[in-house]
Image: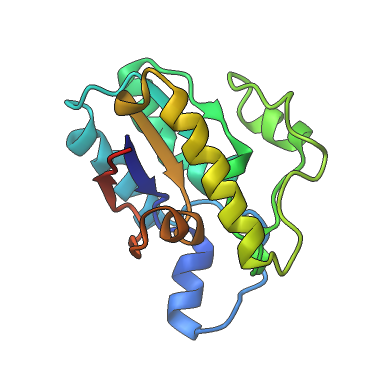
Length: 172
């Protein structure tokens, strides 16, 4: 599978400037993040991607959108790959709000409050990582799947820190 950390969000931009949590729930991509997402099309469109699984956070959805359009794929909302609940940006949007913003996607399986409690214990996040890995190992198209997720989740998955918009192949 291919793992991708979402592109730069407004939270990332402001946190980098100040070193403090800017108190932004479910932030959108920054202008730089939007450009990163467009650039990912050039990097990834030639790969054999047949499925995109994406976290329900706005920044992940916006990261996946340009490539999904180019490949004519509908991203699958996958809350288990959400960010670890630690900062203001780790509070999500309710399914109705997401559905209004992304009418072509299916948010019906999300609970009203699908994001993690804060602070989310590491063992809870690691359980989510292992649950996801087990499901991907059973999936016949895992080798052609793009996973659009977040720093903590991807760190738990591969043991490395990925920068905004960074991607890599992850062998199962």
